[in-house]
Length: 299
Ligand code: G3P
Ligand code: CA
Image 1 (tube, protein in one colour):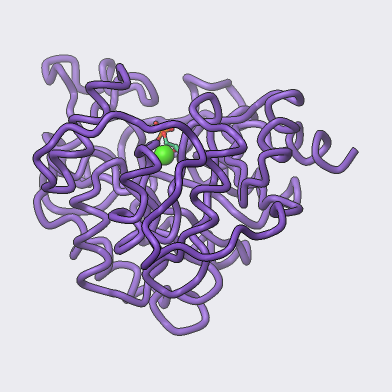
Image 2 (cartoon, rainbow, N blue to C red):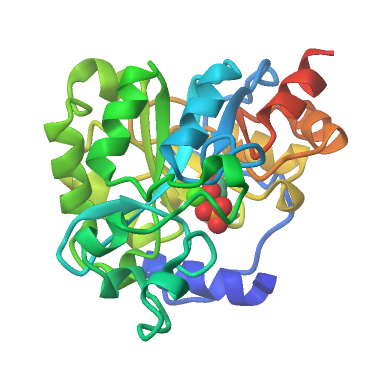
């Protein structure tokens, strides 16, 4: 999105009304939320994006298993909702790209996730598009997925995808997280972040469960960061949109839990980009090729 359009969207979401253009990186934050600049963050957490999605079909159990086998504790995945109200792990708002839905349900274009029941989605092959060895992989429900993340002893950044299509998805998501044991103190404190491109959705999660760590996906201007720091613990920006100054501006603020605001940057799949982000002092790097990032930052 163009910077001016992105700023306008952000302003609208925050309810500020006024268009605030991104300020220069490193601009001073207001004194009430600002803290002294920390030393640059070391050893960013590497997160397997949509599972280890360069090596296994994204958002499947195989992709988080692959991440686990590669030694990655943190995974990121996307949640949406079916026609009959079941939460499923899938990135696009249609099933076309990552399943054989066109073949199984030829008359149902444009194959929106929200137009299919969970039973229908369970029939789809979500692996063959990626490679024959993954034939038969399914679109997991959030419940199935949380059980597998638990079994793998992994931690999770869960993205609420396109919440505007699914009114109430925040409450539904929290219900499944609670039922699968993910809202106890241990999980909330150490193993879970809920993020979204929608500030409104992040605010809802924060209002409903203020103890949960949250992330806003985007690159608000430095002047806007204090407003986001009221409901988001992380600002998770594209790696191409950030600078050392921007990362410092984030780290100078405290989030809703009184800890320094963090930044997990995405999607970093190359050595040079990983080293650049590490040099900026980011807290986390989200990657389809987490092994490439791990190698880059450990050299
Ligand atoms: O976690 C960052 C990233 O997942 C956001 O973008 O489109 O891959 O869900 P996308
Ligand atoms: Ca995502």
